[in-house]
Each structure stands twice: as structure tokens, then as C-alpha cells.
Length: 212
Image (cartoon, one colour):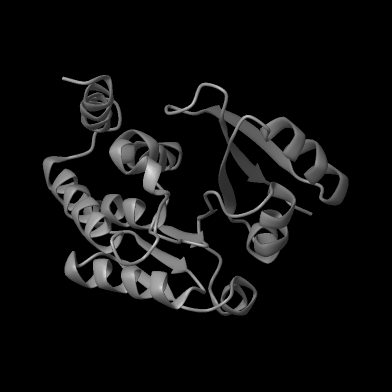
């Protein structure tokens, strides 16, 4: 088995062993990956160079968010793109009776999100409009998240009313997370915690609470 194949297998095993993903949820995730791979041929949903590491680079990276808030049942994913982390979270939430709102302004990507949500009967509502337009219409969730969308300062700005209403932000960030935190601190007052990433040693997941 190639190193790439071994990494993908290890990522699937980690989902089950470390995060308690059930066989039923794994089936949903595998069906999502199949649909994403098919649609990728006509719509750019993820970087082509990452398709060979989709489980390690994308699925596991997204699924780890749920482990940080296992009791949260209402989620919002900003800028859902190809469904990362939104559709992965939807597969996890289906088993526990939760829901997630996916916000994506790109019409082709929003169509993909709706297709997957319908095909897999996921508890996901897709909003094909700009974040600034959609969020004021939604009730504050337990968790608001976004992956590879914008700098932390901007993410807090998008979600400020939700965070001020008691929602918690979970934002995966790469190796420059410390600089993003410093910059965000110049614009906003909030509390934060850092959680190690399972997929990138130098990355962190930033938990934002107490925005004032």
C-alpha cells in the first residue's frame, strides 16, 4: 500500500476508533465522498491536488470539530463550499438528531450542497446567498463554524451577532493561527481556547466565546 493509501486508511480508522463514528455515519460519509468526487469533474469543489487525500485532508479535518462540541445540536457553517465541514457535520448530526444551516453564495456549490443533502436525507438547510444576508435571519446556533473562508477577524465580524447572543465559534486555522488571533484581538474582545488539530501538527482549532 502506498503512503497515501495508508494515510487514508488510518484516517478512516481514526474516525471510528477515536471519534466514535458509527458504521451508519461512515456509510453516509462514503456516499458524500463519492458524490463530491463525481461533481468535482464539473464543479471545482476542492483543490484537485487534495482528492487523493480526501479522508485525511478533508473528512477527518472536518469531523474533528464535532468531537469538540458533541452535545451541540444546532450548527451554522459559513461559506460551506463543497460541504467542508458542513456536510461532514450533517452526516454526524443525523445520528444524534441535530441540524445545520449551510451558507454558500456560489450557486453551483449551493446546488451541490442541496443535492447531497437530499440524496443522503441529511438534516441540512442550504442558504444560497451571502453570509451578511442570511445570518440575520437565523436563530443563534450552539456552534458557528467556517473552514478556509477568511481571516479570523473577518469570521468574527460575519458571526458577531450570533457570538454575542451566546453561540460558540469553532474555527480551524493553519500555522498562522497565532498571528490571526493577535490581529483579531485588535478589533474584538473575546475569550478563546486552542485545540490541537488531528490532521496538521502546526494547526489549531480556535474556540471563540464571550464576544462583547
